[in-house]
Length: 198
Image (tube, rainbow, N blue to C red):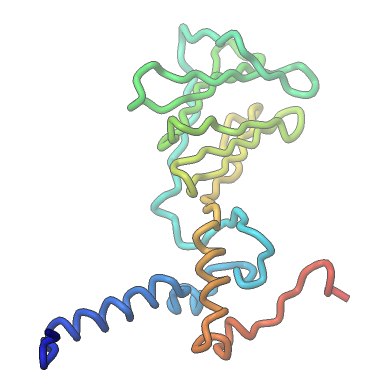
């Protein structure tokens, strides 16, 4: 036999769960208003890596150090002009960060630590030109940072955090399909891509 009344606390909890679920499945308005994304994620064709403002606290402090007695690992990647080379060293202890050892035609190697590196993902490192390295470090499944390092100057030219936008993409695509959000400005925004540029 069904009860003749519904407990008000249960009813309130039920509605709060619906509202909370709706908010979690919808893009956060605060993020939208701050202009967090260069391009509205509603306009993305698929998840993408994007560089986000306001993550200063997550940017690592990277310092190249010249240390005596360091030896290059066997697996090396040479610069396009074959003058410089680097190798990745992954310490056996998983709580220690991997680091690069870089030879730049000096008496000591440069040791460049990669703080916060997730041991499940290898750093992605490429020569941009004869003296400059691009380094991408994943700190988690969807987060990381990029570094551009000048081997001759022995300094970091640029560092930037990034996020792989799989969650962002899903939230925006689903959020803008909901009836109560279809008429909101960010869901009405015109998408500009190479197909409709002209």
